[in-house]
Image (cartoon, rainbow, N blue to C red; front, top):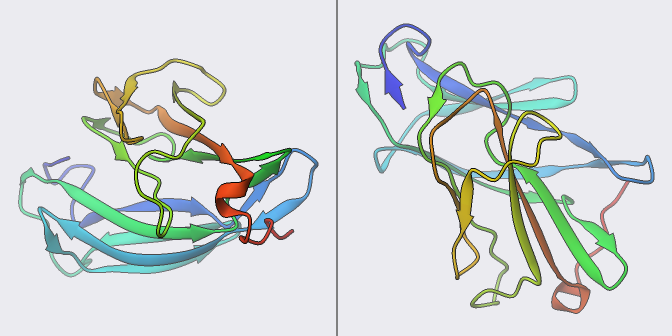
Length: 177
């Protein structure tokens, strides 16, 4: 993104849900492991703030102004308990960017990887952009299963859907409520 000392002075935050409601009405607790944050490939300071129903990854240093410029940030995290068992398949629906950023997002990329499984094991991959509930597709699905946005978007979600055969992760525990 572009830092101009207007909306972004020290950094930014990314809210992640602590719970997600399953179709049957039960709530599943999401467990995160933050691997790290980089700015232009260099580790960036970050910390966590906790709110009711949300965990915020706060990126940057509140004691230091971010120089004006264009930056490429990457937040790398792992999440457990975020998929849904549905018949003979498992399903992940994930809002990659979060909601209502006050500036344009020029490019978003997402990949879902399983330990010890190479290639693209997914039976279905889809993406949705726009307001909550919209089904626009401002992005593309690559052959290896990665997804990336196509055009810049403003105050919109970028949500992905991945489905895979249950047998692929048959030893994984079902999401806990």
